[in-house]
Length: 182
Image 1: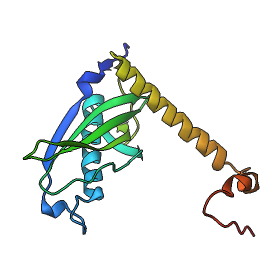
Image 2: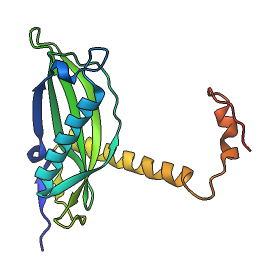
Image 3: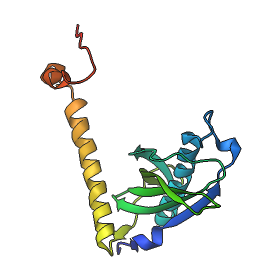
Image 4: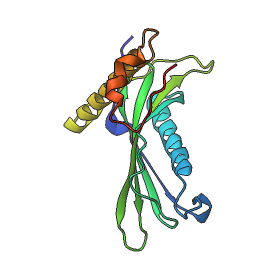
C-alpha cells in the first residue's frame, strides 16, 4: 500500500464573517469565546478536508488575543495544516479583522489546534503525509514539533509521581506567591 501525501497548499481554508452586535461582550468588543468557536470550526473544516474523515479537537495551543475586534469589522480566518503525525494534525490559524470603511487590517490572533482523525466508530485513523514546499512550511512543521516536544517535557517533569516541589522553591521566590507547604 502506497502512502498518500498532500501539499500544504491543498489544505488551506479561509472564512470571513461580519461581526454583529450579538457577538459582542459587555465592553462592546467581540467576545473571545465567539472567536474561539469560529476558530474551532475552521480547524475542523481544515483537518477534515485534509484527512477525508471526521475530526475532533484534541488540544488548543497559544491563544493570544493580540488586538480587539470591533462590531462591524470583517473577521477573516486563514487555516492550513502545519504538522501531521500518524492520526493527528496541527492546524495553524491566523485571525485578522478589517475595518470595512478604512480597509485597515489588524492581526488579532494566531493559534494552533491539534485535531485527530476518526472513523465511523470513533477510532483514530491514519492521516496522509504532508508535502512541504517552502521554507515557511518547513519552519511551521518544525515549530509544531518543538511545541509538541516542550509539552511532553513539561508533562514528564511536572506530572510524574516523583515530582518534588521543594526542588523548585528557590525559583519561586521571585514570583508573587507565598509558599505554605504542609
